[in-house]
Length: 239
Image 1 (tube, rainbow, N blue to C red):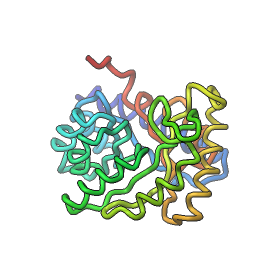
Image 2 (image 1 turned 45 degrees about the vertical axis):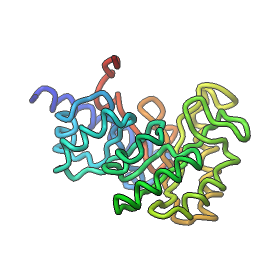
Image 3 (image 1 turned 90 degrees about the horizontal axis):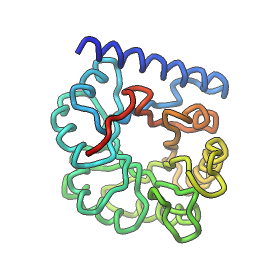
Image 4 (image 1 turned 60 degrees about the vertical axis):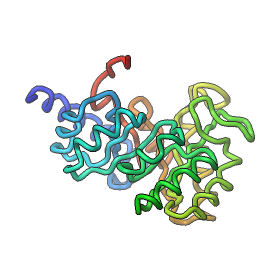
């Protein structure tokens, strides 16, 4: 366990150095960017070590893995983020531990989240996942709505009991005009975020950038970066 703690500490220090350097290059303050460590496929013991090392935000993308892990770590001062595509039949479970859902991309999911949040007596922050590879009216290959659907979905979240529109999330697309151009993709996301804040001033989170492209996200203005393998190592294959 000592070796694993050392490994995580070293990796965290390297990621911190990258974020700090990216902030300096962009003329931003380091505290403007929150690191979310994506702990999917890794055990609760790693989450505990990360918490000891000062991590306060962790993310998961599959409820069947996240729910027991969050329960096992419920004594830790952590905020849990759900970042994967979310099926409505998993919503009730996710609302029990997640403080933020980054992958809201349809009205049916808004309705389900609202019902679950009210039942649990919670206020849930929702980020709209934007698919920069999606045509108007379509969803992206990895979830998310086309840019022209963001405004209406944000209004639906704002009107839903128990939910708050918190901002936007994207994953750099593998197809379409932004494929291989993460900085351009994140710049486009920031444009959409500016429009969103005009209607919903408190929706100021921009979740973008992962291990390979966090510098591009910070340069564009992201407030949160989601880093997994750069902290935890190459992921084991899921069975």
